[in-house]
Structures are given as C-alpha cells and as structure tokens.
Length: 171
Picture 1 (cartoon, rainbow, N blue to C red):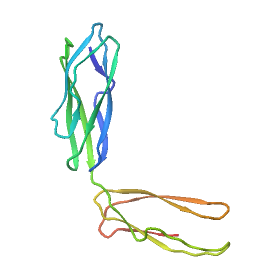
Picture 2: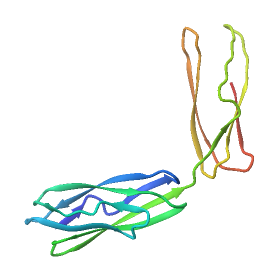
Picture 3: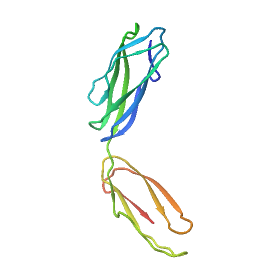
Picture 4: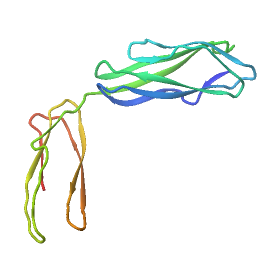
C-alpha cells in the first residue's frame, strides 16, 4: 500500500520570481513490493517532478523532490500523481498547493551612512527606506558602533506597499 506522511503538500507563500522545492516521502505500507511505474504532476505547468520508475520493499520510504516555479501571482494547485501496482490505489494523488505573492522592491535614500561623534555627543541623520514593489518588504537594519563596546542595535520592520509610503529612521 502506497502512503505519504502528508495529506496535502503546501508550499506556503512564495515570492514571485523565486523557485522552491519540497521533499516528499512516499512509503510502502504493504506486505509486498510496491512497483512505481510513473510519477508526474497534473497539470504540469508550474510544478515539476522527475518521472521515474522504482521499487519499494515493504516498510521502505523514498524521498522525492517536487519543484515549484511560479509564473504569476495568486494561488496555484496541482496533483502529484504516482502510478503503481497498489491494488487499492493504483493511481495515487497527492494535492500540491502554493500561494504566490508579489515581490517587494527596496529603495534606500543612502547606500551607507557614516557619522563621527565623540563620547556623550548626540547626532542624528535620516535614512529613508521605501518599498516601490508590490509585495510586503520585511527587513532588518543593523547599526554598528566602532567604539570599544562595539554596540549593535537591531531594528526589524515590515513595510507594506502603499503609494508614497516612506519609512524614516532617525539614527
């Protein structure tokens, strides 16, 4: 008997322009050898898998890779189809799902900022981070000091795509 540890293979959110692959374990839960004669994706437009034949002994697990290469924004679905000599499921279907989201595009007002200040002095500057893409921009900003303490300050921020949305930080 053919089996999978998952009922649906959810690739989650994928940014348009990025490819992703998932390892899927196929197991023979039966008492006789399982002869797999074909593996394919239907429809095969954006998901792909290497078509192969193989034999699995009882209890044996085989890990296969499914690749997703998005073509557009939105949800995408397909079925991984495995043909075998399984008497109950000679055509085994495993649903594949993904949500493709638009890519962000970051624009910085400065490539780098350097400030020279002495102990107990204060100074500030402005860095403008803009997202001109269609997706949400998640970023980390690290500010480092070259003093003896080498203080590192981390900022994490999410920038939605909104017209003329600017994120300003005073450093």
